[in-house]
Image (tube, rainbow, N blue to C red; front, side, top):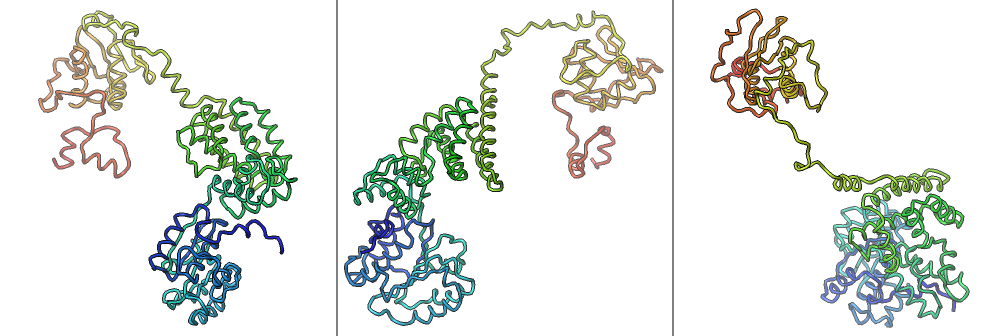
Length: 546
């Protein structure tokens, strides 16, 4: 008898032997038990996770002499023929090889004939997404109203390529990738049954390299057995399969912790000389960084991780060495480098540069560290702040009177605290709050402090201050216990008439810029402009119809 590979010898023959697809199996078993058998099923998911296997078991469940039953006997004539692929009533069709309309037309002619000796005539079409558009159209009518004795079972890895008109007529089942732990347990079961000696540490790298595919894992295991000398060791498995050991990633993390560029380059040199696939190596390092970040956040998605419990414990130690900000930046560098190396011949160069970028990133203080230092540094509080001498209005008046003219007043720098008297303070604040007024006073007025009165004298034919401007000036100095006189050098200061009552503001918030009328705001927003100088109140009201 010829030797059968592990993947064929260990193909599940009933639903109980299928690994990690319980969500699918439960539904199918219940539908069979309740007699709710659909005329069309579609199984979708990654390669090697059991889609075609479950299709064959479903065929046995429906055509078993004791069925339909969720637990086919496996020993009756129909079950044996389906297992060996010799059944006259179960047809396995490769969608990639039968893509034409003629193939589907031939199928449509045969579906009308009754089964030879079974209850159902079953068509299993693998990789159904490979059918042409014409073939799908030819299948559509038959799929919509098939004979009662026909069941279609489709399998595909790319369900997005299957037309919605086909999908809507099928029961859809999504198969998942198999977790590394589940694959490793199954491989150990196979080795124990076949009486093959092995090191437990050698199995997990094989399971991780399978990428969630049981079929790939079994093929890799077969290769490791052939390479070993009676016992599968971790070293022999890694060497035979070209798999990078977890310890390599651990050394990379240690080098990043110690900021050792030499250790990083030494490890990459070792990996490159071993002949390992550098793209896969970089992809594995991205998974390492992902797991470290999850562990740092207190999250461990065991089924979504490709690491054993022992490896996860080691990664947990590294999670305390990096900040979340660093891990996020590391992952971005790795993914960027991964796409870079696809387009260059020397992959090693990009990987080395990416790792050096990580060292430099870690050498610089993070934002979190900067904030922490700022928070921990001594700050000025009211208790230890330097005392500020407060002056009364009489003390201010006692200072030497200064006549301030446009030529002598220099605009102060932004955020500089004025120290040249109350008039300079006024100039600084008016420049911030009412720039147009500041410019008007600078160009056409001299300002001087006489006793407790601030006198504004118009010179050089300066622009006359309107009611709003005068109200602002008087309110500002009133808050400082000073009065204001607005005078013209060509006129008597006594001609300064009082403001109308409606033009005098009773409360002014000098920290907030004065808002224009809503109608003016709408015009400014519509034309995306800005107000250079507000109109006088009476003119504005007249223009907007108030």
